[in-house]
Image (tube, rainbow, N blue to C red):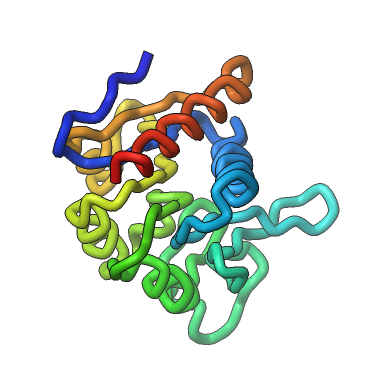
Length: 197
């Protein structure tokens, strides 16, 4: 079972699990529950969503919690500027689009109750400004819910490893059998953190 965060330590909840297990779905369901039962909360952040054409996944988009959206990565793009973009698998990562949407959502300011980031992964970490912004959120002591990929071939991405090993971080590992229970657990932990915030 996940251990509680250290008192005075980071209020950092990290959800991990294999690709396709439902990390983004879990985050959006927790967010819906918070908006339903605690509509006064100020939540900032973003989640990433698959872009599909028929049965094929052709990319990912960033969706901010205030409803803006834009491309994160695509397997279909071939413009002159995309030639220089970083590649993850078959996807070209649009770092400029990602930063223009995600970075404003990670501004630490008065009155924010919770940050949600889905995900801190390889594509997102191609932005050199992204991880420092995540660390500022952690240092702010505002509750933070994020998803991280599982290590590939036993190796973690350096930024992800720093989060995973962050003092006070609580890790929740999703699998198809525990998804529903996990949503309730994470939701209650966040509500407890917010009441003590």
